[in-house]
Picture 1 (tube, rainbow, N blue to C red):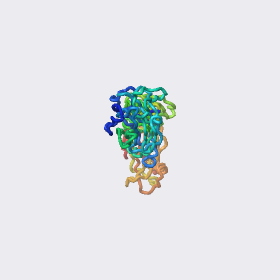
Picture 2 (cartoon, helix red, strand yellow):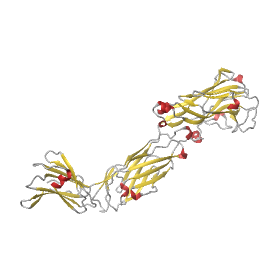
Picture 3 (tube, rainbow, N blue to C red):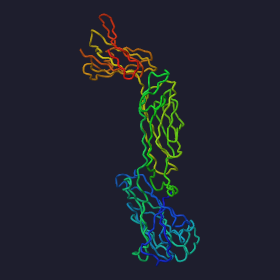
Length: 508
């Protein structure tokens, strides 16, 4: 089990009579090493734990167990075998889970003995009592001239008691950890087992856990890129405008933003002892990316890539032609925000593409820590630029003296529909929308007022004329043709033809 360790260190005690009442206070430091001088012990650092492990409901949060872990308490004094002492460990801003083991640590003057020299508290103490509000080792020491090693061998009689290892320590009733910045910890004291009013030394308070915000991940759309419908070469439509365009042949599908300040830990058991001792942080070990987008189904698609601070990662693409790409990014030196982008060949025409999805799943190194939640967000989209034309004083079908026709011509590189928005010519009020059938390249589609009214759900009224706003994702133009059935004559009321300029207008 991986542990997070605390302990205090101090000087030498030759006899019980040499103790001063709480004059020496233990200091909470990092893990004790056998044979290490007490003066060189390292400082202890509390573990950050994600506050999302806990509920904002106090009753639910209090039921969460944090741990189990090990706590080293190294005395400021070394107690001789003849000294009788008791140890009390108290939780701060939490309670203890009532299950704990304890070993007394043996030391020489100024340092701990070689690894493995301990004695069970059940042997060295009168009683070991774990409670929700404290852990008490009572009546410890006084083993005359023999202190047993854990493997049954006998240790040198000059060894003294230098501290306690509490293992299997768990915390609960810590609802405060739901708030970022809150902490739980321990303190305590060592006192005379024969005179409980005499404190030999205090165990200085130290935080064991500090609540922090978890790692946050967002997936955002790459925006909309607009491609020109009349680009050169004729076979390809270049990206011309839009937040998603990052070049004439590339578009940003999505971005993934990973905060660098969050924590991964869900529990003390998930943090390696080595990481705790060295101050190392948990890292994301891998990222699995799944992109689903109609952009990936286009014949013009050339590659999908991920742009990170470490460079371009081209993943292994599965089912690419079906509009789904799945690939992994392995951790090299941690992760920052990155961009998912798609490149097109430049030799095949683009098609419009609606927004898809990007799903990002994360792995944690060695299975440690709290899993970063899988996140899904929208991709960007592609729209095709084209023409926009306006025909006004367009006669309704109720006019029997003259008839209006709209002619829409596609001289672009792809077939596409046109959208006709109908407004009252006198008031500007919207009356309906009609969508044509697909207009092939170099085709002219002629539609009557009756066709438009039927498709847009408009009931014609005498004396009401229309303004038609016509748009299509292709290069082309529109004409307003008036037909006189009495004479059989036609008149072109278009003052000019729109040939694909964005926002261009054709008027009678």
